[in-house]
Image 1 (cartoon, rainbow, N blue to C red):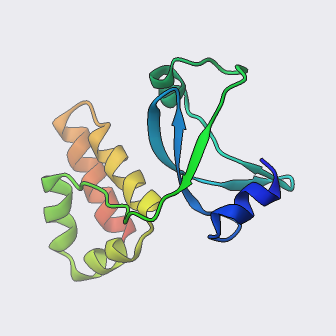
Image 2 (cartoon, rainbow, N blue to C red):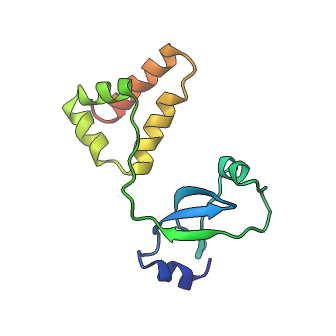
Length: 127
């Protein structure tokens, strides 16, 4: 993506954007890699948009000014808030880092794994 496209968004070199491909939209961030501006399209988003890796596609980018919030599962939220240090550390995390913890806990296949991942998250956060 040319520099003038990123500049036209008016939000710096790595702006938060809303990407739309074939009517499917998702939040993302412009990345700079090797001096090129890029927006990643995950396998999940390619499938939802009905495109394949390597396809030439039309992409709509708009500046995403909405506040990004992560829906934290009740058990993870309770464990984090039980430790003031972990709660403060979690609150200070970026959207992406909060989401990383949430996805780890939600991806557990057993209750034991979920509990272990929740405890690890609290520990990693200083609790």
